[in-house]
Length: 185
Image (cartoon, rainbow, N blue to C red; front, side):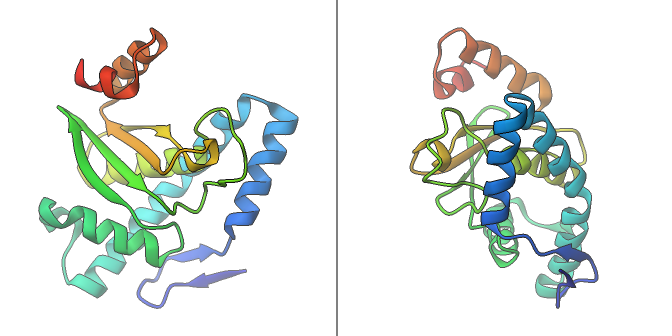
């Protein structure tokens, strides 16, 4: 089932959170660790249309273009958009120099009963990387470091340059928490 959002001309495919959960668990069962890359790639591909829908929605609801959006209102506006489109609410805050944290206590891709060992909102990581890269006008990376599917209280995505997040990941691989690794960047 597809539909055109009432405030945008961009067509979306209606997919329930349950369908995302089953897709992820089926891919994990059949493809193991490759699942993350498959879903991130699909999410990244969805980022362009999501950003186009955001642009249209923003102009229709706030009468502003993304490039003219005051950074002070980014979290509020992005949260309204993602919530209205079924993903959940978000809060955006600086975490460290060059790193933003996107937090959600109700992110749709997360499955609190999954008992996942690792953060697993892979599709969202790709989607958010493309979306926020377009918003920033430069390539950004996204890494999920907390996930409700793993039993955390929220999903937390770090957003930063690919180099910065590669450094954070390297430090985490060496035993630091993501907070310690982020502060060391």
